[in-house]
Image 1 (cartoon, rainbow, N blue to C red):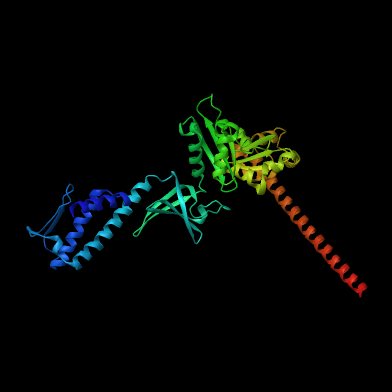
Image 2: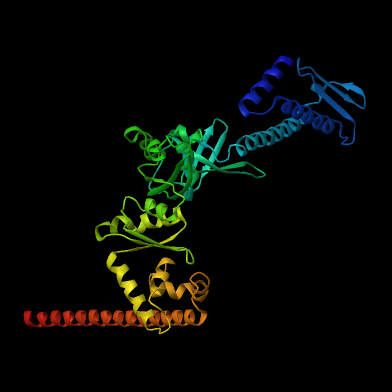
Length: 416
C-alpha cells in the first residue's frame, strides 16, 4: 500500500507537472478533513503525516494514534473530494507559474477545435490555450490536429482555470519569428528598431546593424531569400518589407516607402507631416493597394505622410507664393523660408499658425498674422470652390440620368 501511494504521487506529479511535496501536503490535509468528518469534531487536534521515503501514513487524534484506514466510506469520499480540489488548485498554480514567465515567447501547439470563432490549441497533454478571432490571421483556417506556432500574448488566472491567450497577429509574433530565423538578431548583432503590421497582408520591419561588416537587410533576407521565405510561409504568404533604419527622418521615410522611388521630401516638424514627391509612374507603388504602403510607412516612421506628384507639389507652391505675394510687407525670401520649414501649401500655412513663423523663421508677428489670415481665407475659398464644383457635377449627373430615362421612355413609345 505504501509503495503504491508513492507510485500514485509520482504519476500525478509527472502528469500534472506538480511538485511532489505539494501533493503529499494535499494528501495529509485531505486525510485530516476525512478524520474530522468521521469523528464529528471540527475542533479536534488531528495530525496526519506521510513518510516521503516509505509512504507510511501515521495519524494522531489528541496525541493518540489512530488508523486512518478504518474511518469508513463517507470520510474516504470526503478525502477524495478535498484531494481533487487541492490537486486542481495546484495544477492551476503550476500552469500559471510556468506560462506567466513565458509570456511573449513563441510556442507550438496542436489545434483542437473552434468554439464560436475562438481557436482552442493544446500546448501539451494538460494545457489548453485560446486564440480569439481578433488574434487570428484573417483568411487563415486551421484543421484539428494541425501544428501551429503562436505568441503567448497573455496569461490570466481565474477561480476555475488559467486562461492562456495566444496571438498570430501581434507585431511581436513577427519579431520572435525573426529571432528564430535570423541568428544575428538573437545574437544582438542586428536589431529590429521598429515595425508596422497589418496582419495577413503586409508588414514593414526597420532593422539596423551594430557591426559595419554585417548588412542588416541582407542578413534578414538570407541567401536567395531563404530566411524571409520561412517567415512568409509561416504567415501564409503575408508580404514583408525589410527596411534599413536611418537616424535621418528623410532617409527613413524614403526607405519606408520602398519599393517606390522618392524624388523629394519636405518635413514639417511643427505638424509632424512629411510631404513626399514621387513621379507619376511611382505613385501607385508609393500609395500601395488600398493605401497600405503609405499607411504602414507612416506608422513605421511616426510621420503623417502625404504623397504628391510633381505637378501637385508645384501647384501647391505656386498657390502659396501667390498668397504670400499679396502681403505687401512679405519679402521674396518668405516662400523659401516656409518651404525650409516644411510648409509647402496654404493648407500647411493655415495649420502651422503664427507662433512657428515668429519663433522659427523670425518673421514679425504682425506680418505672420497677416500671412496666416491670408492662407486661411485662401483655404476657405478653395473649400467653397470645391463644394461648388461638386454640386455642379452632381447636377450634371442628375441631368444625364433624367435625359437617359426620357430617351428610354420615348424608345418604348416608338416600339409600341
